[in-house]
Amino acid sequence: MQRILILILLACCFCSAAFLNVDIKDSRLQADNNVYKPSGILGFAAELGVFNEPDNIIDYTLAVGIGRFGYSYSDGDASVSAWDIYIKPLVWSITVKRIMFEASFGFGYIIQTNNFNPEMKDVMTNGFDNWEFHQYLGHRSDFRYGYRLGYRITDQIMISLVANYQYLWCGWYGGSSVGDHMFTGGWGLNFQWNIPWIPF
Image (cartoon, rainbow, N blue to C red; front, side, top):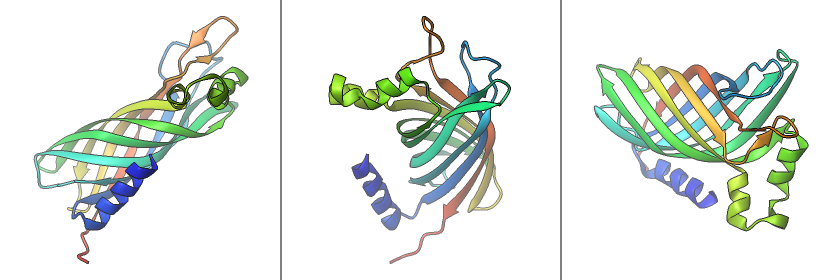
């Protein structure tokens, strides 16, 4: 992951098509579950990307970012959340008359959790003792996908309606005998700034 981040930062330095964007959204459970009165939390994501060409009708970009996702329960009295560092290697968009539709796919690595239950924490933190490295990595990983429908206000600024979803590879347990999956996501707003190229 560190090598990928360094490569993207270098690409930004020598590329004329970099961008920054931020998501602010609702995040809640999207699958059947046994949670008591589930509801949402404030989700967040910030991305740095390259290869963005706003003049192209069909465009491909690559992005890395950091995000927060999760859910709350008991009508919002308590929340469960995670922070991850992620990469989206597959981001495709279609733009017609400044209106853009985009679909993206990627994966992340969990770096921080809040209020995960003991069973889930045990699986995520004791992996080196019980699993091979690739299994441990998988137990701290999430798959993510999303969509954006946006309007380019200027060549540098775009605002979008966004829907992003995250699925943890490892299970979590809502009860002693019931297996659930932490599949979260929701709708929100996205703001993107295309960074003007500064020749060196």
